[in-house]
Image (cartoon, rainbow over all chains, first blue to last red; front, side, top):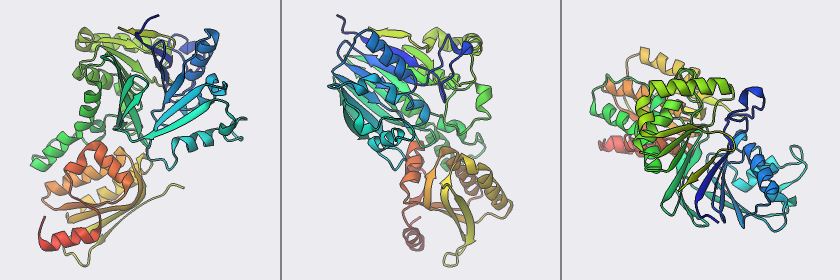
Length: 304
Length: 121
């Protein structure tokens, strides 16, 4: 028996599942990451990857007292696997669902009820056998889940999202996905020399500071890396970051390990391999100081 | 159903001020309309502006960015720029960007008018 923290990637893709021969290496499932110990289980997002996790648990006859599912937000790619998480249908299992109150007029229970309307899925939420508890929180709140301390932060994304820093016994895992660096959207003009404008430009960097603050000294940072710098130019306002945004935050936050995450569905294994090689050459400073890796489905990270 | 509207009128009871009324969803989908609107106003002589957000349902950071570009140009021309907002959705994006600490924001037009008339800004 080990008491160490384990991070497992079950889905690392953004937007839509992309199974097929070009995504075998990194995987085609949408976001789901588990943070577990022998006794406790936190699941970050319920994209299609959550089914892989459920199958693994079944095959290995592994059960937990509680399954704590934390949603970053409710865009489809983060929600679509929910009803394929088999412990939902196990009598006696307890599922705790945590979700941020964002711009939606619905709370988490109502959103899941919508997703499980008969027109979309044959089983309704109230027909599920496990016991489900719902917890809505405001991004910025701190949560205690089993023996984990969880800090939350509001993320800049269409209709917003929440990021999480999960700590336990001095170890910290941070999950920041579906976030766009606010200062990159605003005009780059710096020719206005009034104090007001200088203050304003300075303030716009405070979003990055929030992400750096919550990530500070993390053992593992999992960060939105949907676009390359070139792609980002035509995708401003879509609510996602670039690989170099991820490295910038990781470096400033002095994290130990950075995992690129939430890959664009158009990014094949070959593309990602080539881009990673390019980043290693172009941004060697970051690579010299941080252990930077590509998130891959089924990769297990032991945090000791 | 999503909608968006923006309109600019001269204020009759506050000399030298224009009121920009925004309503609906101020997001990436209306980027072109927003940019066109502000470009049109940038061609004219700058006035003092009050931007009224109380009828906005949702604003994303792209919407805010365009408005802030306009703000920068107004401030550069040494005119005044005030915001009226009691919309929670807009408040959220101001808080996210930290701009609520920089901009002059009032919850109602009456509050702003009263403050201006008393000469407190």
